[in-house]
Image 1 (cartoon, rainbow, N blue to C red):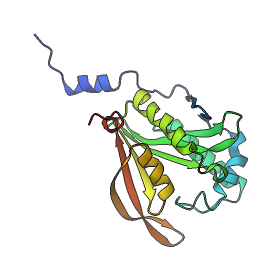
Image 2: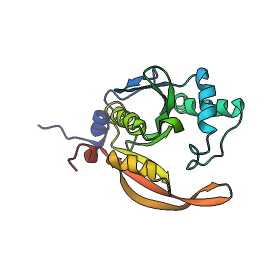
Image 3: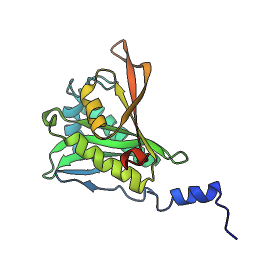
Length: 202
């Protein structure tokens, strides 16, 4: 008699060997290291998020103090502490700070998470964002057993939209006046990538 496959059985299969937050994973690409952020990164974060170009399409103003940089460091580490995501610091192989990226708001029941990335201004146009996110996407499929990865892009951020499209993301809709920054509301474009999109078998 063939055993009936129940919803619980399917869930058990999907969650087999899923990432369990017992350690912070370090990832590597050809040019980059993705690793846990530490207090040693505070000065780099201050310079990074203090640049108006970097935060132009982020719902924040440029930061100006070490205290603000520490708050960002705490925010980045909070995902791992809450076990609902990860935020990696991105460096070149020699240790130079390049930016940060991560998977957030992990929904274990529906198998999706949200991806985000910010690259330091001196390294724009060198493909680092795409390289880092590709590695993170692979981690999401393999270690978190995701079926869907989402991204929010503020209207006008063509650079980030282009990177997402090169990675296979599809624009799915618009959240009108979703972000308030500097007294002005901005639309947010929603992008999504399915595992079957990535494997080209939808």
